[in-house]
Length: 270
Image 1 (spheres, rainbow, N blue to C red):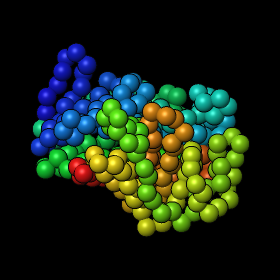
Image 2 (cartoon, rainbow, N blue to C red; image 1 turned 90 degrees about the vertical axis):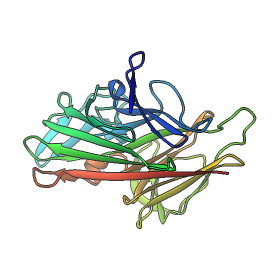
Image 3 (tube, rainbow, N blue to C red; image 1 turned 60 degrees about the vertical axis):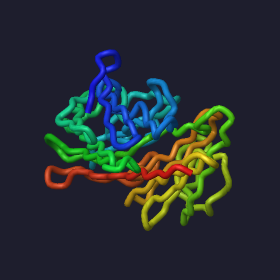
């Protein structure tokens, strides 16, 4: 593990893979290089960031915990999006050459005291990584979600071919005009997507850059949002529930039961 005073990055290395984590920018993964290939879109809004304590849009920023109603700040038109920790500084708890553990406190504007932790681990042979999130309460129980929002580059090198996505979902959440699920299940449709898919046996999405690299995003969670409406990058977002899940699929975090979710990315050169 190395740090760079110029960008506050924590660099993990294994074989020909180098991963940069930015505790000062929401604990995001800012770079993932496999040999000479950069896999993540660069820029402070991109890389791969944590979504917690909710994922995607929460309708009109409103949710309830039992009979108590809450209003979150609106930052995506009429909605609240992607949680509160993606732009906050995280604290490094421990680190070595291939792993780093980070923590970020939950406080205002989230109405309940709590903590989000993330463990980032590179495989010893440099062929993959594992990301693990936990959301804990430091007081009252509350509903929550957690997940990741990676921006994978559409092309990996000058003149390279566009990435293709390969996955099989049992159903797709019908998306309304407000970009939120309507509550109806529909058959998975063709892209372009900004949609939530459900894979009951766990998420598995393969990204294929012809003649260069193949990467698989996997998780035991059944929920994944796929977004490919931009020319620069595509997003494959495993998460613990669908958009607006604080209202439609609340997962209660208690002192005895934190919310835990993990994902693995594995890759091979072609």
